[in-house]
Picture (cartoon, helix red, strand yellow):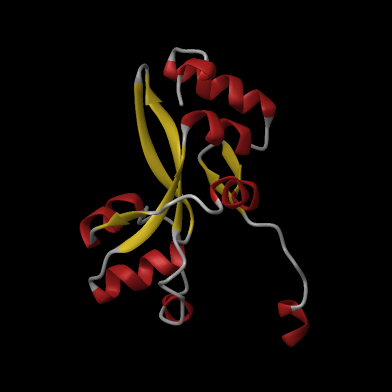
Length: 134
């Protein structure tokens, strides 16, 4: 299985109908000052329905910031979801510690959605042109 470590696989995250390019998101926020998240914040952004190998998670590097995407949940209502770092978040929750995170703006998040038709759908849910939201 060592050969798997040598293959650069793209990082994607699927949330409902939305596929996110996590590699692109991480490139966008590279160098951006991360925000500190409490253990409760980490728990809040980690969806329980996402399966994580807990044994593997306990080896995760907690110094790497999580990647959060700003998404529309309802007209005029934005929130964040975790799109990269489920193993890190799982370990942080198990150990009761907070983490650092970098957050994509709504406009940046739209640029990371893989399917262009879903970009329009996200804009429709929010009820505004993405140019109006940072």
